[in-house]
Length: 464
Image 1 (tube, one colour):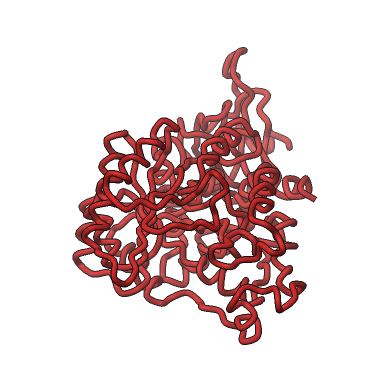
Image 2 (cartoon, rainbow, N blue to C red; image 1 turned 180 degrees about the vertical axis):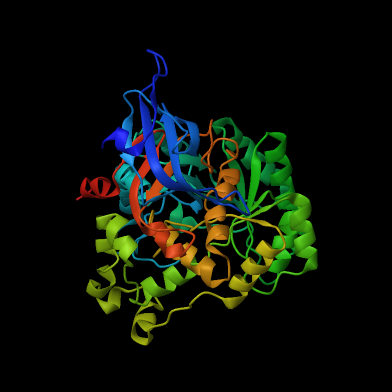
């Protein structure tokens, strides 16, 4: 590209400066702003793994010898952040034998072993999808090894993790000498489990707050509070799975910093909003995941274009296995679902609650619960964000949930989620305006993670 034609100055930044990357002439999107979120004809200068400067093309100099990306006619956003994933699950039919038991076809130990082998490929699906950071909000102790692997892998997102879930119920089908879910029955047991996890330096302690008919909610709240108090005493934030209004309120009273699902049973009320505001809680609605199960287990799951482009091809292939499994071998209820085409859709109450939470100023985080059956690592973010749009959030609100607020979920608010001098160089170059239509977020041209440029299609070709 002829720099003289652009009328841009080229300056030297010193002989010992790190190699620079210059993204020139883009429209930069600032999702943290409530007005003037677009900066047209802007240069972004990256040195090493940080953004050095961002400003008007006419007055923002280019370091000598910089790698040049001509981004005229393109949009630049911060790297996307998924606030709710599980790497111990693949997203295929065999990921949750406690819900749909296909172990006669693929033993769960074999499935998990495959997930570990396939981990570098899974990382690439996230980067190809424009996702440069994820929160794995609960899994086996192997989660901490996975986080270390991500940190040492070039083509991988940043990863925050929680370890085994402090749970009200057991899920023995998932136990492989390293259970992702551990049942506790007393506050003392909850504190002991948290104490076991703290030496691994988790980013979160998480409670799986399952409240069933006949359970004593006050007793459960005491267990949750014990876990939360122990987490906070250890300097760790506290996440809670709570899908009913009464349970979510109990979680907030018990000290939750992060509600990792929607309230789905009834409309949130003024008491919930007051509790959430007082806690400055993060609210991650995970709208698609239940529908993912319903579609997959009724044989109605079909890849959307973003999944055809960015999903792990092995997982995509496995999503069609249901057609090949003999009916006599199907788990109870699955054959019926296939024959009758049962698909739940997204509960309208969850959509309404998201809209009201956002209007009330509660910080919404985009998260998918990827890894669950039908919710694939990487491109599931595009299904999730389309549902957020259906709930009534604007494209800017959705992008903020997937960047600014996602950075808060990563506990990296000052380092990621924005395009600004000093921030880490995680960003996405798009071919279409993400504030015009949310679906334009999938029009990914290039991804930058830690200052390194990745071509999404090259990443995906490396998996085939």
